[in-house]
Image (cartoon, rainbow, N blue to C red; front, side):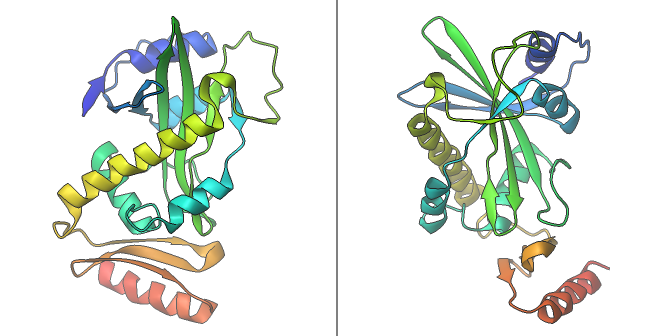
Length: 232
C-alpha cells in the first residue's frame, strides 16, 4: 500500500482548472498487467465529485459482471466480503451511492501509461440493487469540447472493453487475495448494511460473513430489527 500526497491535487488542477493546495494521503495500489501498469488510488468524495464533472461515462459490460458473480473463487459475489476487503484496504466507504438501492461507495482514480501518453479514469465501486458495479469514467480536460458528457460512451481505444475486463478481474483478484490472507477467519467486527430496494442485508456477526436476500418485506424487516438490537 502506498500513499500519494500530491497526485490528486495535480489531477484536479489538470482536469478541472482548479488550483488545490491541500495535501491528502490517498492510499493506492499498483496492478501490473500485460497491457499496462495501473496505479489505483482511493479518492475521497470531494475529490471524486470534482473530477467526475470532467469525465465521460463508459458503458458497463454486464455479461462480464455476471461472469464475475458466478466465479466462486472470487469474493465479488459477496457484498459483505467485498465491503470488508475494500474498507480494510482503503478506509471507510464514501457516500456517493443511492441509499435506497445500496450502502457503500469506494471511488478511485486509475492512472496508466501507453507509449508516451498517460491516461486517467475514474472508478466507483458501489453496490446497486443486487449487484456490485464499477462505474468507469474517462477523464477529459475541462476545456475539451469534443465529447458530449451527457452520453454513455463505448470504451475508448486507450482502455478497450477487453482491457477493462482484464483490469477488473485483476482488481477483484487483488481484493480476494487480500481477504483470504488477512480477513478470512480473522475478522471480528460486527456490521450490517442493506439494499432496501432488493430486500438485501449483509454483514458480519459471530465470526461469519453473511449475505441475505429476502423474498418478503416482513422477513427483511424482522432480520433488520434483530440486527439493530445487536448493534445497540
